[in-house]
Length: 182
Image 1 (cartoon, rainbow, N blue to C red):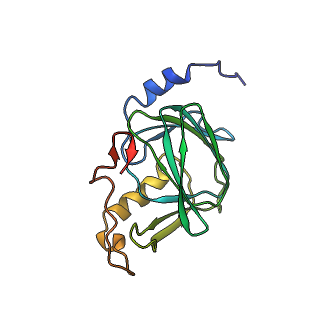
Image 2: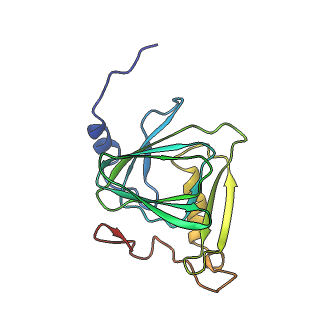
């Protein structure tokens, strides 16, 4: 087996992620490895909360991000600045919010068949869970996106059964004011 030489992560990022990829924009650096080592470039347009069966490690290369977590029934916003690292324990609903120009690394474990990731959406008015789906995340670059796109396209699913508020499709409304989440 030939071991790959060291390389510039910044050059790799510019080549493989020349621009942000939209709602969820990530690229895996070492496909087929025992770890998912991915680069993610902002801005993103998300209001879903992901739940991973394994811990995640965030390292912010450029700019800052917010990672909203659901803790004891309330949303807590964590800011991760350039050069900072953040450990997210397994099975915590979280929503990464990436402003324009931000670039970060997220490290996680590949899922084995039978291990389930989840995505959920919560009413921004009353906190009620609007919808959730659990699935095998076979491909970190595409598995999540299909469920997010389906939910965003379904106004009925985005309408709260408790208070009637409609969660906006984040791809159709501005998410950022400067470098602050709306």
